[in-house]
Length: 424
Image 1 (cartoon, rainbow, N blue to C red):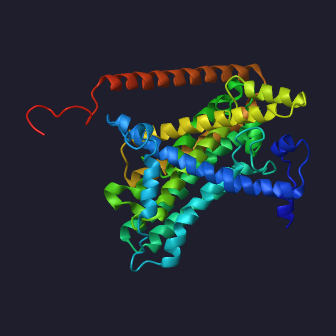
Image 2 (cartoon, helix red, strand yellow):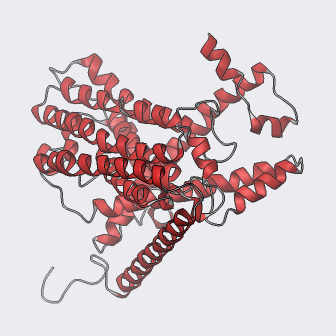
Image 3 (cartoon, one colour):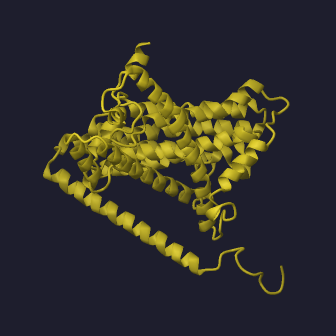
C-alpha cells in the first residue's frame, strides 16, 4: 500500500500543464492507467509493426533486392497482413508438451520488455515515474526476466531443438549480462547516478556534454554495451537460440499463431528498449546536439508558459525516438552483414574478451575521474577531440550509406528485370 501511495503521489508535470494545477489522486491514477493501456500498448505495437517492415527493407537492400513492395505504399502494410495471417492460424499444442508452461511462456517473454518502457525518459516530463531513482538498474533487472520465458518455451515444447535453443539463450544471456552491466557501471562511476532522467538532464546542453565524449573509457564502453546488447536481444550474429540453419527455429519451433508473434514482438521492442538505454547512457538521450530543446524548455518553464513546455517535450520525444531508430538500423545492418559464429566462439568472446575489456574500462574510468578534475582544461580538450572524432565518424558513415544507396539504384536489382536470354 505504501508503494502504491508513493507512486500515486509523484509529480505529474504533464497533468499540471494540461489542468493548470496539481491533479487530484484519482486523476493521477486514471492518467497512469491511460498511459499504460493506451500510449504504451500502442507504442509497442507500432514499434513492432515498423521494425519488422524496416528489417525486411534493410535486408532487401543489402541483398540487392526489393523487399516488401506490394502490400500498401512501399510495402508498409506487409506487417499488418502478416499479423492478420498469424491471428487466423491455429494455435497448436504439441502432444507431449507441458500445456501450462507452453501457454504462459510467450507472455513471460513479452511482459518484461513492455514493463521496461515505463522507465525510459522520452522527454523532460515524458517519463512514467520520475521518482524511480534506480531506473537504470531496474531496466537491467526486468529485462533479465525475459530469459525465463525463453527457457520455459524450450523446455515445455518437449522438442530437443527447442531445448537446445533455450539452453543457448540461458548461457548466452547470463554470460553477456556481465559485460553489459560493467559497461553501464563505467558511466555510473563517471556521473554518480542510476537515474535515467538525471542522466538525460546532464547531457542536455550540447554535443560536448554527451557521456560518450566525457572520457576515452566511456567512448569504449559504448562499443562494449552495443555488442553486449546484441547478445542480450538474441540479435545476429548472436542469434544462436533461434538459428534456423541449426535448430529449425530454436526455442519457439513449436509455436504458431499469435503466441509465435509475441516472441518477435518482444524481440523488436527489446531492441528499442536497449537502444533507448544506450541513447540515455551515451548519446544525450532526448537532447539535440545543439542544446536547443533544453534551452527552450527551461526558458518556457521560467516564463511560466503553459503549453510551450509540452511542445518542447514532443520535440524531445521525437529526437529520442530518432536516436533509437538509428541504433535499431545499425543492429539490422549488423545482422545482414556478419556471419553467425559457433556457440563456443560466442562464449569465448564474452569470457576471454568482453569481460576483461569491460573490467579494464571500469578501472580506467575510476582512475580518470580520480586524476582528471571535472571542468579542467584536460577534460574539455578530451571532450572536444572525442566529439570531433564522433562527428567525423557519423559523417563518414552517412557518406558510405548514401553512396551505396546511389550505386544500388544505378544497378539492376535481382528479380526486377527481364529474364536473361537463353532460358528461364
